[in-house]
Length: 559
Image 1 (tube, rainbow, N blue to C red):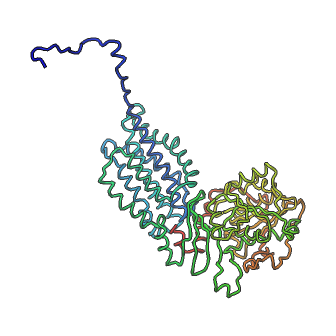
Image 2: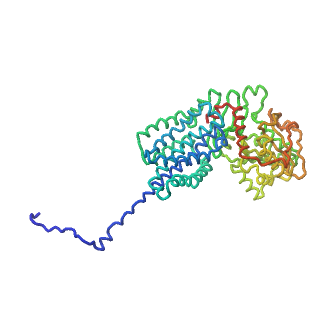
């Protein structure tokens, strides 16, 4: 290469040419700094709404869904607003980010709930939900609302809204415009497809840690023992731990699952020889097992632990055309609500073409797998209101027998005891068909009286009312209403034959409605509305104590 002076062209200064401008990349738009703030705040609200429902799911198996939900929404709202306002009061003095600590708290939630459940005062349907609800939901809501207010501080809302308005208006808006709808959404759709709640609590904690603005990784290492405890020592996650805790009480967990109606399980008592189907803090049914000792005593079959289910079978004994057709095995039956399947199994055993409508697929699976529901019983997994409406609109019916057996453990299922649904149900009956309606409650309560009067009215007062045995009049009792569809027809029961008992001792005691069990229907002018919500809550608490008297507490607490 030649040495010396060389002519090296220098870049031109001045205006760029038109072609150079075209070759330049377009300027990158600046990111709106408000977007991350809004997204992070939205994520926190989603976690609060999700945790609200998860908390309820952890309480329902121990206390029942209704006692757990008393004042839940109002307390959730108050916790959110207080947490948001509290941050506005503290903002001049501290800028510490508490979100990572809240995430750690959430990961340890399953272990903390287990610890709290060992305290005697929490084994109560009133104090228990308050303490557990505060720990698992409302304290967390307060902390996350605090974090939301802190996250929104860069927007300087106080400049445009004023100090007082900026501290309260966003909290109110987030609560009623965003939190409440999300909470409703999770409450209605989360139980349909979900892992067990403790695992969801771990996922919530992990998601919150990712969404947190600050991430002190040394702090997150403290979450590892909480995660290990949940997987290794929590009976709600580890079946082996549940079996270990139940074995001193002679109880065995045969199967369990979360489903659209909540927690469903099958538990067996080896000492007393029974098996039950549990849904949250209620029993859907159960059987005394046919053990060798009972065979020696002359037992021929498993027996229902509830006489009311055998009393429902008396619908076959009503003197109707259907009853006469029953004798030649040409009758049809519809059962609304499956439970353990006691009534539909009996109807099918008598040669009746039986259809069951059950909303929960897990209940159907457990009834077939653990309580012997025959495959010949047609099982329709569907919402009863929609199924009955669809059949009524298509004018498909003609059922000789209908058994209305939906669970009423303190709160009547929405709409299933209303005049509209019962009217559609009557439309599915054969002209001379018969119906049996089971309702659990107290006769002197206005809510119970209203339901009984509605049934009486829909079937044009062609009904009789019985309880399922002896007992005090003020007790929470099972009531069965028998009605006929044929205008002007009386409800009379024929004498049972040996075949009607199906070899069952319990049926000999409960199948035939006794005269001393019969009750009068409440007078139409004496039935008021009353405070329905308060009556439902009262019934739920009575039902809770009744369940605790029937079954050891360990069965309810080790879900």
